[in-house]
Length: 133
Image 1 (tube, helix red, strand yellow):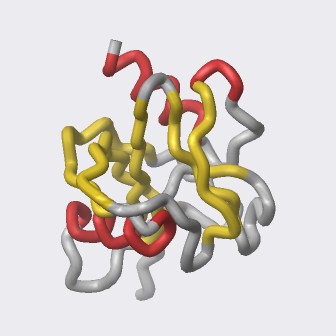
Image 2 (cartoon, helix red, strand yellow):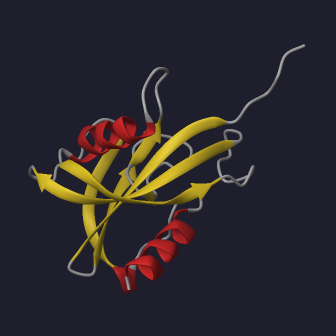
C-alpha cells in the first residue's frame, strides 16, 4: 500500500521598522505574486537549517532564528498539494537584500500596505504581527 504524505516547507518572517520582507514569486503557483520567503525542506535537513538556507537563497540575507511562530497545515494552502509549513520569525544578521533563486524580486512592505499574498501568508503575517506586539 502506498501512503500519501504532505510535503514539508518553511517560511521566514522578517520585520524591520514596521516593514515586512516579501519576495515576488518567479514560478507557478502564484507566479508574480508576493509571498514570504521560504520553500521545501530537503531530505536530511532540519527545518531550522532549511529556513536559513531558503532565506539566503531568495534574499541574499544571513538571518538567525528569533522564535518559532507556528505550524500551518491546512490541506488546501498550496494548490500543488498538501503542504505543511513551519513559520519562523527571523532577525537579519548581515547581507545586502537582493532577490535570487526562485524569487523575481525582494523588498520590504509597510505592514499596513501589503500587496495580495500567495498561499496563506496573510494569516501567517497576521499571527506574527500579533505575536510581536
